[in-house]
Amino acid sequence: METQETRNEITLVLGGTGKTGRRVAGQLRATGHGVRIGSRSAFPAFDWDREETWEIAIKGASNIYITYTPDLAMPGAVDAIAALVRHAKRAGVKRLVLLSGRGEAEAQACEQIVMDAGLEWTIVRASWFNQNFSEGAFVDMVRSGVITLPAGDTPEPFVDVDDIADVVVAALTQKGHAGEVYEVTGPRLMTFTDIARELSQSTGNNINYVDVPHDAFVESVRESGAPDDVVWMLDYLFATVLDGRNAHVTDGVERALGRPARDFADYARDTATEGCWRVQ
Image (cartoon, one colour):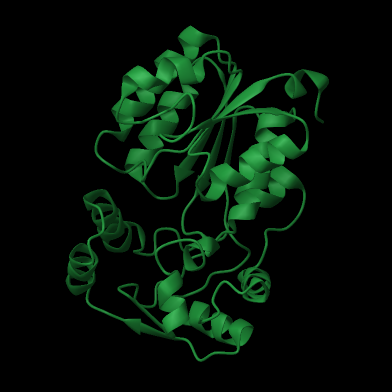
């Protein structure tokens, strides 16, 4: 149940312009909660690479939603999360909600830092987003009709970002979520071939999945001019995380929200209606 106290609090949303962050910020604002966006373009700015920006961004905030860009598996993430927690404690922050990664040892190390902070905490542990195909690196592949990735036939329970945002907002504004680790997934396992089939049905276009060699994929991403951290992250995700370790469905969404997780087919249908994949 939401309390009046939470409405009077300020939540610092790190990555507040990203996939989950902008949804969390939007929901909080729509329900009358105070929000401060944590990003390099915000005022005051928050830059993970410039610790001197953190203190003023955190000052006065009661809660922090933590998303680390580009991924908690990145070298340096553990030290950054530890430093952020120290700043939060000094500033009197009461509650931390961390977006973490499934099957990532480095992410779990970051989780432990948050758990040991002595503050209220909730962990939301996710992996592959539905919205990677409409708001991320794969949207142009969908538009072209060929999804070329080194994913083989490994199944993954893709999760909807709207579900993640709903869980985060509940953890930030309602009682009963402190001390919980919500591992969130969609309701079924899907291979990238399954994804292509669902997208074909939703868009009315013929979309195919083509498995490509891992090294060739990484090199093509690098040659496209992608930042080094993006190249590193995609290399890591396809080479390490997408090895079957996460090929099981969890009940995190239902446990947090009391409703089932959103299915990929619903996401694909609604996104196609919005025209995201329409070729101009």
